[in-house]
Amino acid sequence: MDYGIELKEQEAVVALRGRLTFNDHAKLRALIREMLQNPVKRQVLELGSLEFVDSAGIGMLLIAREEMGNADKKLVLRGAQGQVKRVLTVAQLGKIVTIED
Amino acid sequence: MIALNWFSRTPPAVAPKPEAVAPEPEAGGVPYAMHGTHQGQQLVVDYDLLATWMGFADVQRRTLDAIRAELERTSGHVESATIDLSGRFRELAGKALEQSQRVAEIVSVAGSVSIDDERVPLDDVVVHMQSMIAEMIANIVQLSKRAMSMVYLLDDVQKDVAELETSIADIDSINRQTNFLALNATIEASRAGEAGKTFAVVAQEVRHLSQSTGALAERMRSKVDAVVNGVRNGHEILREIADTDMSPQMLAKERVDKTMDSIVMQTGRFQSVLEEAAAVSQEMSTTIGHMVTGMQFQDLTKQRLEAVGDSLSVIAAGLNDLETRTRQELPPDMRITTPDAWLDSLLSQFKLSDMRQRFVRQLLMEGSALDLHGALDVDAAHVDSLGGDIELF
Image 1 (cartoon, each protein chain N blue to C red):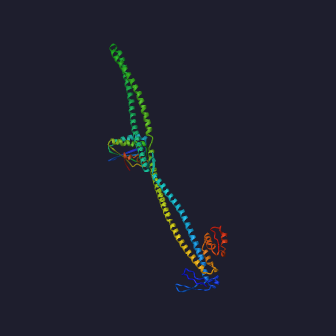
Image 2: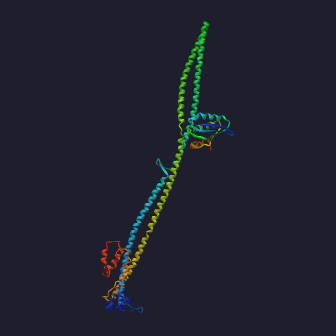
Image 3: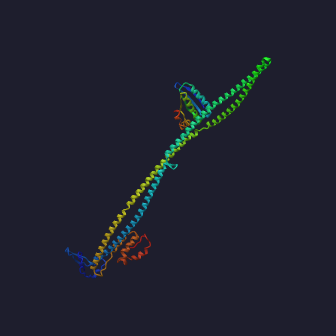
């Protein structure tokens, strides 16, 4: 998995690419730290280019949400497609995290 | 010559007529003047005409008897056939009703399943199972999150333990320097002679202290190594757990949902088809019931035919009476002619051979015309060929 952060006035947009699996846990932790450090409140994970997420990836997204919540920031998952969208739906993650199309 | 009074019941005097046996009424008949006492008019009737009339009357009476018998026979046939049909229709109606009840029974259980001896609607079962699966997936999600939190925690612990190892190494390094310094102090104390004696004791104590510290550091290192190994193993196991992807199991819910929906839909379709079938069976049963009721026409028909038969009996009795009275008026040797042409024409009407046979028996074998037509021979020759087309005349 790769990511790129784009800071905007109202939100930070983090574009995730490739596959988000357990192997990316260190990378995701670093990303969370970066998200905590930037000053913007609304943190958007752009998932349009993410091809696959495993159950560990879902767990990491929930940790990210928790960390953002602890720092009074808001996490948004946006534009999920294919398998990622299906897993988010089946896991009913919309009950816990804000999901946008 | 004869004088007939048709209105009087007392027979008039009979005058024999020698030439009364004439084959044709028109040829050679002798007219006779008859007085009508009431009307005051005369009617001329000859014996031949009367004989011909008698022949007709005889045949008519027999015909009426035959018709009456045929009516009774037919009525009997219709009655037994109707009773038989009604019975079968009732049986059919009963079966249709039974079928509709069975189908209704199926319909009543089709939409539900039995769980622990309790009927549970299929919709409820599906909703329950779907919520169970959703709960299971929610558990998987929470488990994944906790596993990852644990992984991060152990990542940190590993870093801390590594720092601990470094610290122990630092203690070792310090201890070596302390020991070295204590050794130098001992050397310097011995050079100082008597004056350095006390200092040499202190230096020696410092060396002992340094050795104790070294032993402590060594004990710590072995324990820390054990902790590090434990943490690393635990971390490895946790990685394996967290690395087990459960997303395919989560996505199986999609398939399960579709299957459940399909089952519910299919059951609904079966149910509606079965309901229709039950309604049709019910309708059939009702229709057959109406048919059975409709067959009561036979009762009415039987009564009508009986009335017709009774009328025919009365007419036949009247004819018989007239015949007897007329016979008394005719000369005893007067021959009564059989109306052959009329008889032939009558019998040719009957296409059914068994019916024709019955008429022949009634009309000819019991009558005077038996010899003329030879019906017995014909009848005997064809009596076995039932339903065949017997040519009698």
